[in-house]
Length: 275
Image 1 (cartoon, helix red, strand yellow):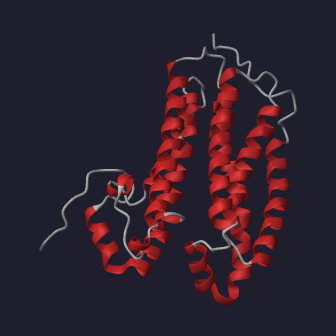
Image 2 (tube, rainbow, N blue to C red):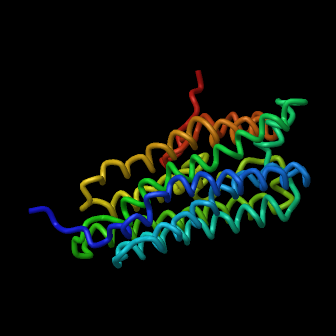
Image 3 (cartoon, one colour):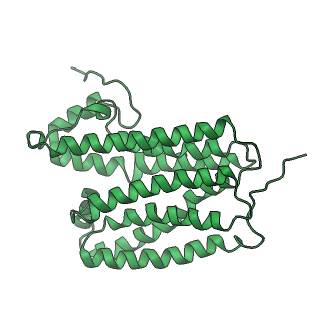
């Protein structure tokens, strides 16, 4: 006989959760878009996703009938991730008033169509919140199995990812703050083993929800988290734009870095082909 799920949502409380998430999210994204265009800072688009996911997770747990220890642990992991990344984005991208190179490139590339093209990009963040809430919600409502090894494994993954991303961000910030390093490529610390260690640890974070949900009959769907975040960071929104920007600003030095250092997964540096 299958185990009873004591973490299931309240009767009817979450029947309209996803519709409400999309509806309220689209309004919030529209208002944020209007603000971003007014202050000429399109980097606000990233905050819609990071902060929105944290808020969505709080609302989801609030509508659960009997949250378990695992439910609260998953929420805590998600909120730490959301809070750290949102704070980082607001402090370094928004309050600084300096546009993210990715969006500066898009604005120049789109030209007169920029205002029209950015709006769907803001709305897309709401769909991303719904997409990534899927593995989080499954982990929160995993069947009533005792807290065990896989839960501690989920905590360990989350802490490792959080620490790794924080260290990578600090190492890069400290390198760029030194006047002698202007125009140079950071190859110190974690950046010696991966050109994008911050993206790697962001991807690692999403494996925590897979570990939390391992006892759920729907655990396979939590693989959407690491699979989608890898696709987005490696091929769509992360690496391609960052590499383009770095090549423009650092030229030959960055080309050499590309020849010696792995793109995403950390590994020992290699020697460039001399032929």
